[in-house]
Structures are given as C-alpha cells and as structure tokens.
Length: 406
Ligand SMILES: Cc1cc2nc3c(=O)[nH]c(=O)nc-3n(C[C@H](O)[C@H](O)[C@H](O)COP(=O)(O)OP(=O)(O)OC[C@H]3O[C@@H](n4cnc5c(N)ncnc54)[C@H](O)[C@@H]3O)c2cc1C
Image 1 (cartoon, rainbow, N blue to C red):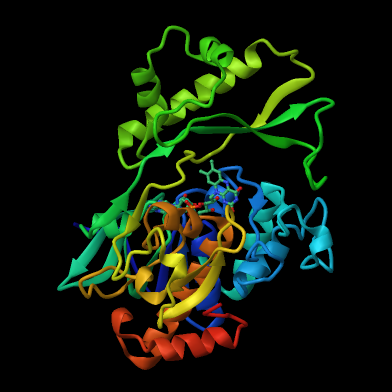
Image 2: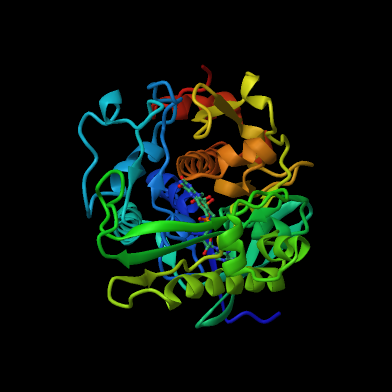
C-alpha cells in the first residue's frame, strides 16, 4: 500500500477514552514522544460522548480508598470546569452514598474539555478525526498501524502500541484472539425536563435517563404496559434480537443504535414540546462490552479472592461493597508472547463478572496508567512487554501511591 504520510513515535495510544487518556498522560509525563489517535473530535469516549456521567468510586465500599494515581487525578479533573466541585473531604464517609462510597456526577462536556487541556499540557500529540483501520504484526510483534484521516492513509510506527479502542480493534485487526460478550440495550439521553428532580449530587441541571434496560439473559424488565407501548405485538424472541447483542459486527452496531433512537423518539413524540425534549444523545453506541484481549491471564469470576504476585493495582467492585480485585500485569498484554502491544481500559483481559469491574471509568484510568508506565519502562530497560520486570513496574507505581494487595 502507498501511504500518504508516515510517522514514528515512542508510544502510540489508540483511543482517546479514559483508558487511552490515562495511558497517554502517563507515557508523556515519562518523557516519551506520545501520540493519541482518536476517531472522534473529543476525548473521554463513553464517559463523555457516550454521556456516561457517573465517576464510580475509588474505594472498597467500606470507606477505604483502594485505587490511586491518575484515576484519582481524573476524578478531580472531571469537575474542574463545573458544575459543582469535589468536596475537600471527599474521602470522608459523610459525602458518600450508601453503602459508604464517594462517587461524583460530572458534566460530560466539562470533562471533555478539561481532559484535553491536561493532555495538551503534558505534551501528548492528539490526532483527532483519525481512525486506526489496520495493524501490522511482524514476527509476533506489533510494529505499525494504518490510519485514515483527511490527509489520506498513513502509517504510524512505534516501539509500543496501547490498544484503548474500547473494542480491541488494534489486536483484532492483527488477528489476535479476543473475548466477546452480549450486551443488553440501555438508552440514555441528556434531556431538558422542566421540574424534574435534580441529580442526586445536585450537579447537573439536565440529567441523564435510562429509559429501558434488559438483562443479558432473557428476562424483560419492562412493565407489560410499557412493553405494549414500545413493542406492540413483538414476540419475546424478536424483542431479544433487537435489544441483546454483541457490538462486534458493523451491521449490528447500526441496528442497535437505530433501535435506541426509535425508542427515544417514542419518549418525546407525545411530550409537551416545551417542558420535555432531548438536548443531546450519545455519540457512541451503548455497548458495555465489545471485545477485550485474550491476555496472558484472563481475569474471571472468583478471582477477587486471589493474590497475584504481578498485581499492579486494586479495583473496588462498584456493585459489591467489600469486594476488591487485584489486576495482574498479565491481563494487559496478549497471550502467546506477542510483543509491542498493551491493552487498556475495557480492552484489558477479563470475562463476565471481572469484566464488569475492569470496564468502568476508574478502572480504565488505572489500567491506562499502568500501560503507559509499562510502555515507558519497556523502552527504558530494552525489554519486550511480556518480559518486563514486574517488580520494577510495581516499585514505580508504588511511588505514585498504588497499592497491590489488600
Ligand atoms: C450504558 C452504559 C452505562 C455506563 N455507566 C457507567 C457509570 O455510571 N460509571 C462508570 O464509571 N462507567 C460506566 N460505564 C462504563 C464506562 O463509561 C466505559 O466502559 C469506560 O468509560 C470505557 O473507557 P475506555 O477508555 O476503555 O473505552 P471507550 O470509552 O470506549 O474509549 C475508546 C475510544 O477509542 C476510540 N476508538 C475506537 N476505535 C478506534 C479506532 N479504530 N481508531 C481511533 N479511535 C478509536 C473511540 O472513539 C473512543 O473514544 C457505562 C457504560 C455503558 C455502555
């Protein structure tokens, strides 16, 4: 293929969601020439353009903070442009929702802007409107990605790539084994609703709504009345087909999005036009899980009880107080000794229950930071990603406040 341009970086991060932003931030702060490639023109991924607006807790659910570093920095960053602010004593349980955990609601637009400022100040080269569309795997090492943007097709070479695409697209294009799971449809919109209750933390005037949700199996959470209104005469089987799916097929992504828009139109079509109307709808499909890497280790249900010698940090389980997960370094790179690639955020290696924990905002920030540091250390020590000295990685993370075991 003839390329319109070629570029070389120390570290190339694909995807400007929370995982990618944390990875790029860490890598640039280590002095690495870092590029962040993002197909949209905003940062934050699902957390911002997907209109997710809740920064889940950094604690274990019993009032003890377990996640530190950039995950904590971004919590503050999410609210620097308002509305509201993080209280100085945010760790104190008096600020917490029950069970005892602090979380905040942020304005997605504010977070987008403040994230961008943070990355620009750190020296990250941001490439917006640029999509990675292919990966070069050469003798078991990822050596380049192909991108497309207004300048045409380009080839980006780098010593280390960090796949933070949310759908593991770099690894997938390289033909590396990935894990997929079903998603149930959740529909969000930021709407103007006169007289509506303000958000629980009183931060946002507009508030998000979840109109319908279906569990991942087959049971329907809609009331019979609501179902008849939204899906008149539709069989259970057809309803499932429309609302439970994987995000890994181009056609299904479009069908999923079209269906969610149809339901939103249903919500607004009979409303009083002045007191209830949509303000913004998500710019990303609402798939919680698309693809993650099949890593050297796959974190799975029950692993929260395991102590891993290569643990690089702790994650509280946002659903279950008292459950704390260690994140082994081996979950951040592909199995079978593939070199040159790390996977951050919801691309890190996990299944089922464990994926529920690794996919959320604080977790994406934490795994992103670890990947950014691991990329830097691999360059510093001349080691390949799978051969990195995990004791060295842990010592550098510990210097940033990370804790590895309960
Ligand atoms: C309905 C729903 C509700 C949720 N609620 C919460 C919640 O309340 N709290 C919480 O903490 N988490 C929540 N989450 C999860 C959380 O928001 C995301 O999982 C998390 O933000 C993922 O971050 P990420 O960086 O791993 O991936 P993403 O946010 O998916 O970011 C990936 C980025 O990569 C870009 N990209 C993808 N492919 C390419 C490519 N080929 N080339 C260039 N760029 C590319 C995308 O545009 C995107 O910006 C929710 C998720 C969903 C779907």
